[in-house]
Image (cartoon, rainbow, N blue to C red; front, top):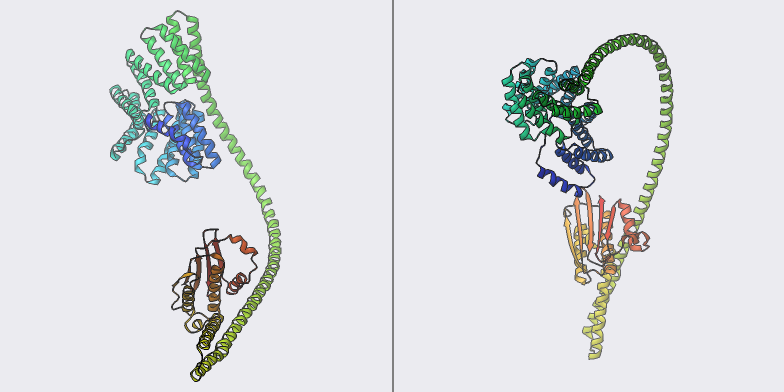
Length: 635
């Protein structure tokens, strides 16, 4: 009976290309999947190499806590163990794989593992568990509605019914599996095993021609899939079928082919079974010497590996071989071994049945004791609950009182902090307003007072000139004096403008900044590009507008004084009541860390003005790479 879908999915070329990628792979989940794929390609033709790469994947998956990697490791390891005949180990590995599949919440993986567990239990001789797992697989698959997977599920049920000797029922499910395979027109990776199961069904129903037909189909598909394990098992089945039909030469050829594949796969259980088949074929063909050599080799492997079923068959054939050689002592010994092993099997079945009955009786007895203990525990539990509830209520009340007190303290601290912050903001606002008021007064005094006087002096001098006759030398001195007077008037107007830009008061922040940048350009000290976004229709109070203007003014002045820059960009934008200001230059740059130690008035003014407006400041600069200052303000 064939079950697990063990097959090679790629040619040797693919495996070699993956091996070349392995030294380049990082220690991550991709490397885990690469190791698992390489192990998979070794799975059916070199178990030692497959195990080597599987163990590497396990170590890396464990360190990375990679659930999918651990699931795949246990699943593939179970298949390798199954191929080697270590069915008990395969069952435990499948249980671990099932646990990780459920953690992944992957119904398809859960279904696949349940199906494989059914097969493993069939080889362990626990046919009841095999059928239980097979029915679980069918139920789970029908719930998912994945009809394409029913082919494999029906095959699992067919195998379960074979072990129960219900060949007709098994054949029905095997044929259903084949029909679904045909309907979906997709090559199943285990279709060779479905053919083998169907062949066993017909063999069990004594329909030899049909059995041979499907065994041949199974062999052909196994070769196409490079499934050497399945191919070796099928040759073993054919060997037994030929023996039953007295075709001993064909029996011998099939046994030889099965042994060749078993040795290649390094499966000791399959080697022992194939040696037994070949020894029996040689015996039936009259070659007692070869039969004797093969049967003793099989006996050594089966004895070392405790392969009881194989030992029973081996001792039976040994009794025939020894009898033909006239070695009746060995023949009798072998016959007694066979009977002893058969009796051990029967005794185990009896013990198993008796043990199950005893367990059932003990279980019922324990159930009664448990119910009595549960009643006593229930009374104690109720009392404990009342006590715990009382303590809990006290703790809750204490906790609420404590939390309320701490919350009041926290609110008081928060209120004090808010008042201190409001006080600081009020103080900053008063300073800034006082500063701007003083600037406005000085600008007005300069412009209206001193400016008017100087303009009057200029007019008087021009009037006097018309009534005087001056020498050429006095005329030249007069013109120089008038030029100096004009320069003084312009400088006075510039100072008054800087103290309080008239354009800012009349036309707003956007126009004032644009004019400021134009004035800097005209001075020739720095080429400034001004950009504004969404500022033309912005209505903003005079105090924050003046503050922003002063910040930009200070930043540009710093650029002209310290940066040795040729060009600068001033960008101001308004988005959802947030004003962002960016000033960049192509100067020599500096280390921003020095700003923490800066004690200059200009930088202090910038920080204090931003603090008043609740703004954010970001300075980015590197020596030789210019400077970028980004400011965000909520207005």
